[in-house]
Image (tube, rainbow, N blue to C red; front, side, top):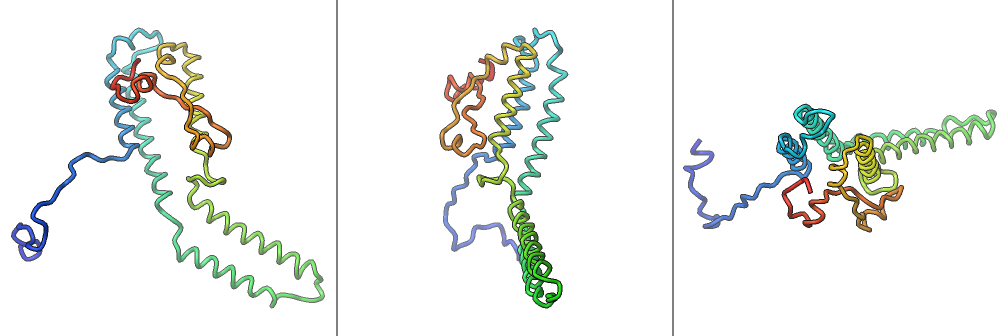
Length: 217
């Protein structure tokens, strides 16, 4: 052990003093899941939330916690899709096989079959195979800012609209008053198709510019 790692002393050629950053650093989604669970447990016994007629808050805390666990798993799956590209040898092999297949077309030409069988059919077949290869390359990572990528802002905006609709149907005016619509920054709004102009935010965070530790306004 000492021959591999030494006697635990600092190397002679290294710096005499090293600075180590001890600030915690976690992924944003992990932090958001932690804050959601913290808020649900902290407000479970809040007197201001116990005067509702449709149930007890304790019954909904396990449901919220299970949803946050599912959210973490889904984020892990999405991150795996993004960080796992199509293997380069596989992509090269597909293109090489397509090239050899197209190169062998002239050897299958028979003059008595006519122009349609010798030219048109092979042309449509080539276009179909090249199109499938191009689509497979584009679908390798469906998340991004390209035109054919999934529009995440549109899905988030639809979820926020559904949340506000459920709150109106349930008659929870207190929760509605704690949420406010804010204008989406122009740089993000311009890239949204269909257009998204606003997003949902906590009134306590908007009024305090993100400095308040309270969720309920």
